[in-house]
Image (cartoon, rainbow, N blue to C red):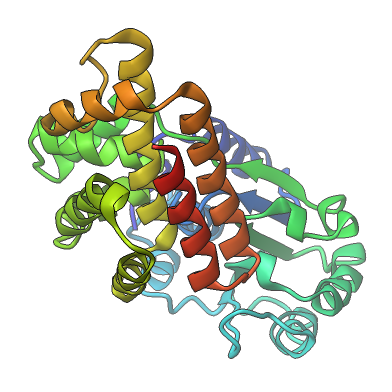
Length: 330
């Protein structure tokens, strides 16, 4: 596993963890907050490896016995919390994997580290069970909670953790990484960066996805045809979207960026900065006939759809309402 210098962006988090290791001022609990694919687990793994590194010089050294164990996920003092239920981390998970285990001293290191991904999935009861450990942790314990939603964490949990937030990576930094490390041409990098919104993991996923271009083209075709579509045709389109092996948020972002282009062209009559440059003729047509209020209603509907889907509101109903708003306002 590479070291801190290989983390793209996130300068404040890198600086914080590096200083903590150098000074020995390591907290017992951290909350690392960031979007899906923003690199939270990667950062946590590098920190854990560096903290337990026994080599000389820069840490992690990547060659000592501890680093090699960490790289292969075989370090006895780095624990990764798992859970059987896909959408819930329960009291049993916390008690068995953290509370009952944490009383056992580290096997070979000065620290014993616990990494919990998707910490927002902890039930209130599970968080309260963890709280007892956070209030009186052993001196060797370090707990890393990785979450996509700070709001899902109880205030009592947040108050006992050092919170570190993943920041969007600058577009130029992303572009440089994609072109140099993945050998991606600049035009393809630009497209993925537009949809990634500073998220390195999403940019890598989009630029290497064989399905992304097809899904993007299908979404654009839907938007072009929606004016003439009947309700039954919209329902068929909704089912097709559901069948994609693709994050629905990414699909909705394709539509959002389409209307961002429409809005930009309507306001400036300028092609520079548009993402769907190949669709400029249709973009002009939509910009001319759609009011600013109509575009605003569509954007609001997209954000509401995202919120509803996160709250587990019916997918079919959510998407039907969204597409009807688009049909009525463009």
